[in-house]
Length: 114
Length: 111
Image (cartoon, rainbow over all chains, first blue to last red; front, top):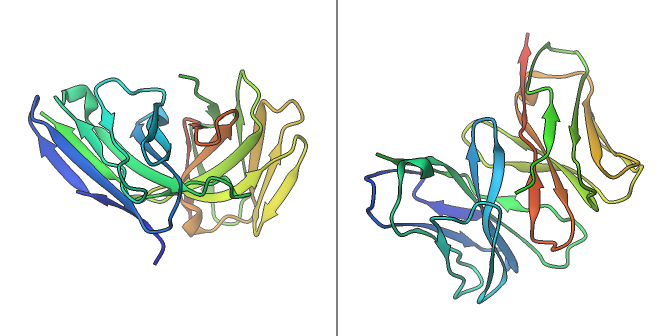
């Protein structure tokens, strides 16, 4: 089944403790992206990647890192999480040249930083 | 970063009613997309629009790409309970990997 898989689905952590949220897609998509969703703000892009070793900042990159060493994986790293990073996170992917510009989204990771 | 304004923020309607929602931007977009998010899931693409003035349907859903390229509209006809969820518009311009999302319209359907 074609899908974007995020892990974990739920995570509670403490301020300052480094964490990684994994994202993997099995559709051979070139583009991958991370979004955070907060009430009243919709989805805001954190980072995106157009292919292996090609990444760029989105609208809210502060406090996050990403890497794209393999085409299928795009982990999101929080080096020193803070409470304002408590949010619902989505990973998404799509083909580079598809006429259909829609991203396929994962099921989300709900992160709570205390 | 830029965000799109969606209205209304939420809607409570009865089953069978038609629904209209819209999305506006201060900037021009080359592509407009409409997504639906079910509770506990990620957004799923409903309709994609690629040309100013374009009107596209997908079953009971109809969406339009505004002629100014700064807005888009989504209509749902004869709503049913499974239409419940949050509807997001998204605009795309420039780098194809960047999508800007709206703030969402939460739809509740009562029997």
